[in-house]
Length: 245
Image (cartoon, rainbow, N blue to C red; front, side, top):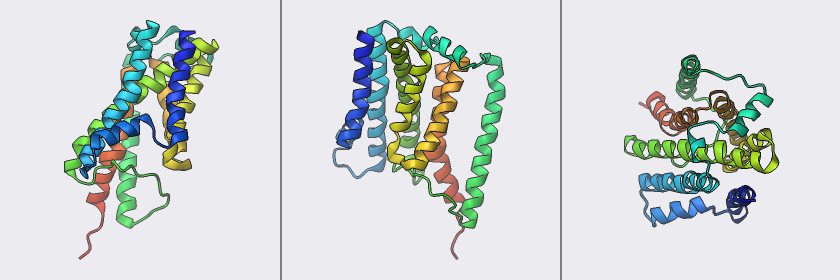
C-alpha cells in the first residue's frame, strides 16, 4: 500500500509539471534565480531543483520503505528483472573494458563536432540546453548541473521508480520499463529527436545498472554525458569555429 502511494506520488510529481507547464523543479529554479540575469545563477538554480525534486524525493521514498540500502546494493526485485531480461552480470574488473569503449565513443563524438563545426555543417539540429556553457565563467555551474542530474535523476528514474514499480506490479521488468519511460518523457522539452536520444541513453544506463548493480557507476556516466553536452561540446564548437578575417 505504501509503495503504491509513493509510486503515485512520484508519477504525480512528473504529471503535474507536464500538465501545468511549470514543474516543481522549475519553480525552485526560478525562486533561486530571483529575477537575476546571471546565467551561472540560473544554472545553479536548476541544479538545486533537480537535487531536491529527484534526488531528495527518491531518498525520502526509499527511507519510508526501509530500502535505503538499495542505494549501494542492487535490490533483489531488480536482480530478478536482470535475469528475466537475460542481462549477464558484469564484474567490476570488466568495467574497465566498458570504460575504454565509452572513452572511444566520446572521442569520436568530439572529433565529429570539430569536423562539423570547421566545415559549417548542420546536418541535424539537436536540442541545445539554455544551460550550455558559453564561456569558461559558466563552465563551473554547468558541471555542477551535470553532477546534480547524474545523481538526482539516477536515484529517481533508475532506482526509486523501477523499485516501486516492481513492488506494486510484482514485476521488476515492468518497473524498469516504467522508469525508462518516465525518464524519456521527463525530457519531452527536447523535442522528438532529443527524446529519442535520451531514450537510447536511458536504455544503456538501465542495462549497465542491472548488469553491474553499481548505481554510482551509472551516476558517473550520466554526469559525463551531461558534462559533454553542456561543457565539452560548446567549448569544442568555440575552439573549432573558423575565424572570420
